[in-house]
Amino acid sequence: MKKTKVFSAKSVYGMVSTASKPATEAGVKMLEKGGNAVDAAVAAALCLGVTEPQASGIGGQSMALFYLKETGRAFALDGSSRAPFNIQPMKTPEKPIALGLKSTTVPSTPATLGYMQETYGRLTFAEVVEPAIQAAKEGFIVSPLVYRLLKKEAAHLREDPFIVKNFFENNEPKRTGTIIRQPELANCLQTMARKGWQDFYVGSIGRKIIKDMKKRDGLITEADLCQIPLPVEREVLSSSYRDYDIYTFPPPGAGRVLIQILNTLEAFPPEIMNTEEPIGAVISALAFQFALTDRQRLPIHPDYYLQTVNKLMCDKDYAAEIASLISIYKSSLEEKYPPPPTSGETTHLSVSDKDGNAVGITQSIELVFGSKRMASGLGFFYNNYMSAFEYKNMTHPYFLLPGGKPWSSVAPTLIFKNGSPRYLLGSPGSSRISTSLAQVITRLVDRKESLDSAIAAPRFHSSDTAKLLIEKLRFNDDVINALTTTGFELKKRGAYSFYLGCVQGIQFPEKEGEPFYGVADPRRDGTAAGPKSLTQ
Image (cartoon, rainbow, N blue to C red; front, side):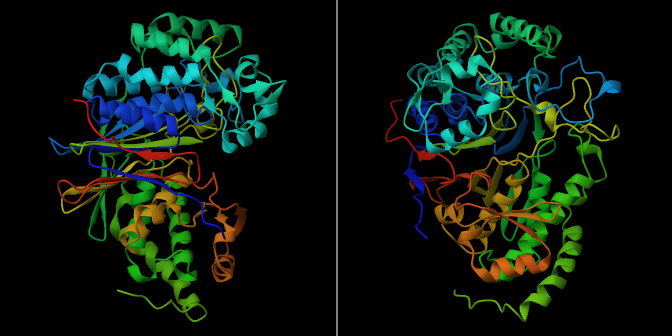
């Protein structure tokens, strides 16, 4: 099979890896101006909302993982959106609300990015939003991926004339190679640059949102926007894998899933942890299924996690019990597949600056193009996070309640070795985030692969229901047969599938003077780049 190109870069001045070239360039520009990793991450995140609008934007939510080198502090920034206060729990619909303005929670991305930049950045908010404004004015080129998604969702998108105006031509989605310009979004971002990000909630932008909600039967009111959804700084979840330290995202994110997977895989010898061989594939697939089942079985609310006695998913002894169950399948496979001989819609961005500070942001408007509706006169897609709540079980931590936070699958992750950061990784992909990251991490640690090889390698995902999405043509028949024999229902995905995550990664230098190394996952439209020089 023809290998696809992997975008990678080196620079001693820092690194930016995103799913969109203009967003990567926006982050690099901030580093070149003398900004730090936070400035670069915020600029890239804002630009992603313009040039990758199907995945994120100021109408959604953003979660971030920080490492501040000077203090040695790692922490998570919970930028959850919030259910409107108009929700009536006793009248909860039977099915999740997934389309239209009623499916929209209070957007938190402007508050999260604004808080990040003002609290930890060096530049002004007006400076970091400038590349996004330019991208909205000048437009971005429609990639094959964007065209495919526009075409797939065309029936829903056509129902909104504000989307049709900029994203369609002759009532058909704009084709690959054409340019999409977003003047309304440019004006909205310019207003935020001039008046501050708070205007999104308590200024002219906020008033336009309320007017739009009233006109088109949305749920968000002035009371929702006046209570600005500022992010919460939370302790990271910490664990280890082999001789590496792992720091990842706590609830409402899904770092628990990643930790349980790694704890389970750690019980097996590294030399058999190759998902391109039958035994390694089955062990990994079962570890994924156990972890995702436990997350469904043991939901945790972020406000109670630190106080709870239920931290089972992060417990290595519990993972050892799971590994012993998996070993039963392993033993039955070893005779048939002896191990080979060994020899000695979400988006994510990763940023580091020359000083070693690092920020990973996973942000989303939930499903592809969110609610499939655009804010009138403002140019951004409303999210559809109302679909991310529990609708039936009132005792569930994420049952739909007024002001409630939706469940999230984000898991931006820092990997340390000998007390120093070695990798910063993150991915979009809903429940597929943790399984994508686990496969990259095991390749880096167990197989000593390079970052670009680990990210580009064949990938699969097994769910709590034993359905397994797999880049089928990239795996040999023995692997396919072993997974089928174990009881998984295989669902074929294409090579380098959009649905199997999109890991943006940075490798930190081991010695002073060595370059940072960045890699963008070939499964989407990303690039990695670092400054060639610094002006300040």
